[in-house]
Length: 129
Image 1: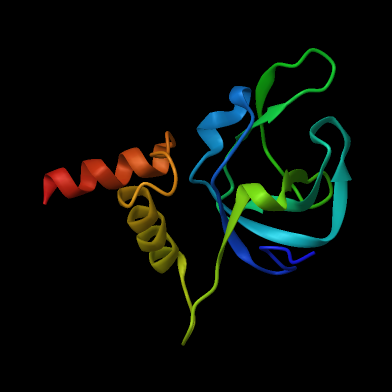
Image 2 (image 1 turned 90 degrees about the horizontal axis):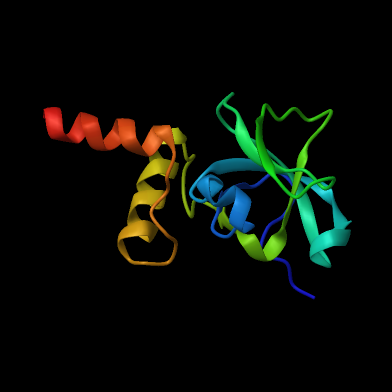
């Protein structure tokens, strides 16, 4: 089977569980090896946000979401199908390039508009200009 992401990619979360929908649009680093996610019955990657901010994580005990800081030692797993890899075709991509990609795919309707603080700050900055 062909996977969307590979070890070392930057990716955008494009789908989430209902409790963690606020993570949609978040840019993450992807690390292998792939892992089987039991409660979703899907293969996924270990991911960590590129910014050191808390993200919504669903707890298996009581099916609620809580904000947690993610570290590689205790990563979050997301299904491959829920990630959109960001791969530059030429040159290096930095964070501002990744944000432009996110804005572009949001405008085209490929993902829902992110409900994260970063997106709100960008919109506020655009209004000030």
